[in-house]
Amino acid sequence: MKSFKPAFAVALTFFLLGIVAGIMYPGEWILKTLKEGAGVELSFKYIYLHNLKALGLIYLASIVYVGLVLVLANGYALGTAIVLALNKGLTPLQVAAAIVPHGIFELPALLAASATGLVTIGYVKSRRLRGLAVIVTLLVIEVTLLAIAAFIEAYITPVIMKLFGVSVGPMG
Image (cartoon, rainbow, N blue to C red; front, side, top):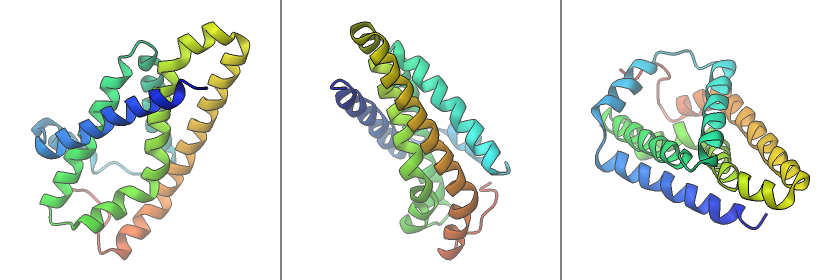
């Protein structure tokens, strides 16, 4: 799928621009939302279902190019969360310990969902059933990556965070 790589690069660019914007101009409404959501139990089921909804929405919206706005917003939320964590006294290493273990699976899955959405119509039109099979295969891979990320976020990230001296609990 030749068009997937450029589509992924576009999604990654929007995500990175969102992170930069979130770091430079953290939105108070995002900070408030993050603080309110900090008390939510981070169970595997909750995380996985939340991320599956995000993946589905990003994929479907990306078919009509609106998904890039969602990717930008996710980057913005991450950038703002980084600012919030740093303002609460966490070190950059502690912030990385909270994000990287599950993020290395979750973020590529969400960006790939956007790229998959961006190429869906054109690829399916040009390849018919083969295109549909490729799209389904990509979505299965993305859903699997989210399952891995949710497992790590629910069970491994809290342990890593404690190793780095971060108490796991509400940020507010």
